[in-house]
Length: 91
Image (cartoon, rainbow, N blue to C red; front, side, top):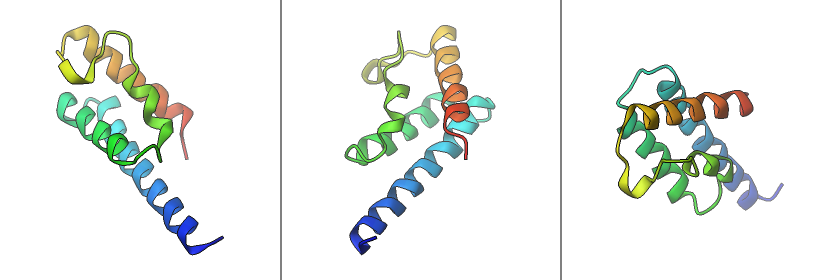
């Protein structure tokens, strides 16, 4: 593998691991949901498409990242999405 690809792969894995830690905190209700969800979005947005597997977390029905209002339903939707993502993307 070329050094450039290796670095890209390493950055990808680091971003996914960072997101996994944050999503686990969301799933376990062990964080400020809004802040943590926005941190996951930050990982996704700064990756320039490198972590496309996070994209479904920002296409949730009734959840709009640019005007997020944390109703009980939105909280439940985000928490359920985090739990499902962790199951689908386990190590």
